[in-house]
Length: 348
Image (cartoon, rainbow, N blue to C red):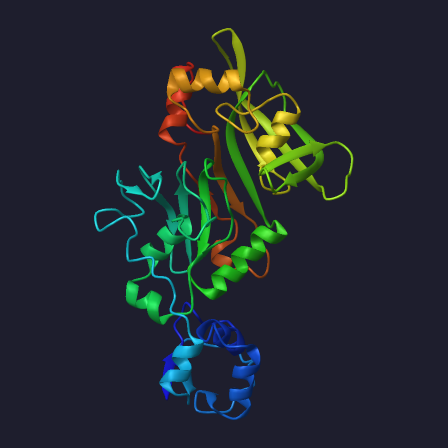
């Protein structure tokens, strides 16, 4: 017989969902049968599987060690710190992890439920391949010890994603409940998301562009059309010029962009479609502009930064987060580019 106690991070989920994670190799029919036969009980009593778990609940499994081992795949351990003891999410590190060199990963906000970090350039938000080490693994390593990772079915999860070379705000839930309401916030758009980017050309006034985005998954590239098309999703992007810049005889604009909708590559593809590609963008930008910024400033990525998130006040969101604003400082290289073009960034 084995007993497991529900932690605060695991509380809030259904018993059958928990069992599906704990006995992750077992078919659902197995643990429903065990519940019916009272081989799995909750707090000493028979359970149906639909019960919501609370912190401190005890699940007793009257199963042999061999059966538990057979149906339970041990979770992959990210380590207390995937970059080594000297590196933390709020500190600096020049070690390499896989092919990604992380200079600094900073915590913007943290409490008992939520962690918000400023993702650096070059880091995946989530794994693309099994061997990848992404922001998700860094967050798990930051929040959980190896023992907690071994014993818990819960993993902290991110609630929004950024392209590998887009910097800025990523929010993560530290328990089941916060993951649920954060995911709902992003899904139902009960928040405002603002980005900063440097684009080619002069933009003089606030505008909103409407179109349809279709993603080519084979080439990881989006195309934009003005009319609806099969497989295309409607996208709306608003932007406002913050500074017009004349540099080397070419006009540029520092833009504040608001995502009214949120699709992969939306900002990059939408701005390119109206003749204002983002500086440093190898996929949607201009080659000549990319090579110029690479030569002059060493820029090898799109100058696009997820700058600010303003939370709404929906009923499902705990009141302490109503109207909360998270803001990520502009990356040093982005600020250095602006300074090199004669613009000193002091925030808005």
